[in-house]
Image (tube, rainbow, N blue to C red; front, side):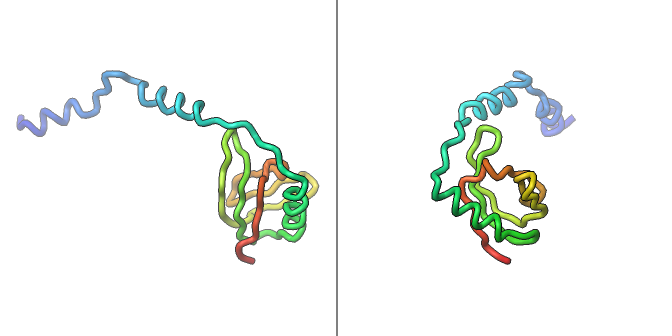
Length: 106
């Protein structure tokens, strides 16, 4: 057996199994943030944009999701005004979690 073949036997060995997952989990919990308040002016601006929005439009969103502030860009694949949510490339975003929305392309 060549030296390279012997080395390949030990490459998959993880002496501290689960350590990398535990470190990723701890880092994710450390980076969590609380949802911040939105000004009345921003709420009004978001309402104007949401009322003009239709499926297929390309938008840029700043929103809150799962303890993180997120910036996303994509196409609106679904829009539900009665249930107050939209889907941005398949991801559901509730209106009250949107900090800022801009229409980029019709």
